[in-house]
Length: 212
Image (cartoon, one colour):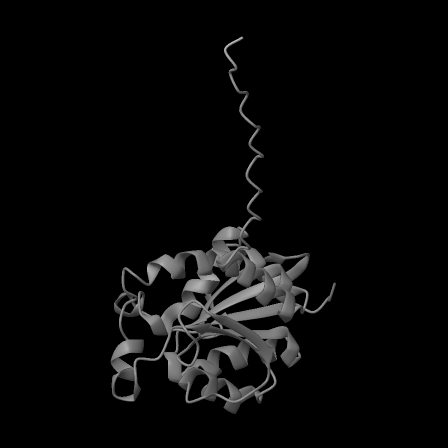
């Protein structure tokens, strides 16, 4: 297990009016990790709120930037530099329009795909940090802003609640650097394999009554 701490930054906008927005699913994910793994209470630091704990034996810091989405790099950059973290020890959890609702992808490096939070972090740290992309679906170009900055619907909760639970339960794989294992565990949790249907019992031939 790495002696280097892990930083998991969930992206979102601060304030109650944004709390349920699709754009804030990163905040929701790190809240779920903190609750499931009994992290320390949140406290202010690095232009945001942090919570410390352990995932899979590795010291882990969760971060919720309070800078608003388009300046997420101020918080994530300050934390990463202060802790002297290599970029493979920085994981950013964010909403992804180009993934179907409930789908998830994890990888290291890549572009920002127009995501202002990623753009800010990349400008501060470079592009080689790890990302966990949480699919929220795409409403079509004219409606993107209103869609992302709007609460999840009641129907969304049917996949969102189990997905957040699966992210939290599977997060030790992130601490181990096993992004593929993390994705596999979540895929299984969201769509468990169907049990094999047992063959119906063989019918015994009925005894004929010959009237004896």
